[in-house]
Image (cartoon, rainbow, N blue to C red):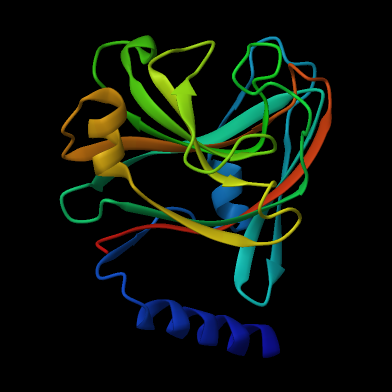
Amino acid sequence: MLKKILLVLSLLTLSSQSYGEVIKVFEFNESELSNLEEKKVRGAKNKTIFSIGTNENGNYLKAVSSNGGSGIGKEINIDLEKTPFLNITWKVEQGLSGIDERSKKGHDFAARMFVVKKTGATPLSNRAINFVFSSNEDIGQFWPGPYFSKSIDYVLSSTKENSNEWVSAKANVKELFKQLHDLDLRNLDGVALMADTDNSKLNSVAYYQNIFFSAE
């Protein structure tokens, strides 16, 4: 009963802030997790272990990666004309310090979220922004992914500023697609969450919570 009361208070706090229209992306419950499409990183030894937990702010997704990696995602139409802002609360408990995240050998992240726009007939033609919780780079840094240049890595949070603590971050996805891909998008086609350590062969632990798009 106490958890339900705390959850209601959390939602009331969320709605009282200046977000305008809100589109929730994930529920983070067992039913949803079992229905999300999961893909293992090509060549990875192990899958990422995803599990559901609960705290005073509601449900969260825990991602544990050990010398491997996989992602979970869904097709979802996000109207960027109405709700261009991505909001995410996340935490990296065990990061991947000391690797070169811009290189193929070090291109691992304890937590990341892809936002995807289909621009052709095959997945290789898609454009994406890979919002990452970096263990080594500064917030606001970005670069083309070393494996797929049409996916731009963008540091939304960093353990250099927030290590093992929950942090809420926000990004204007519509403006960033124009800046990084020179695309004036009206909508997104999909989202995915991923944690991977297949290149560095290290271990990571991270959490995701309260992911939504908003008008403001």
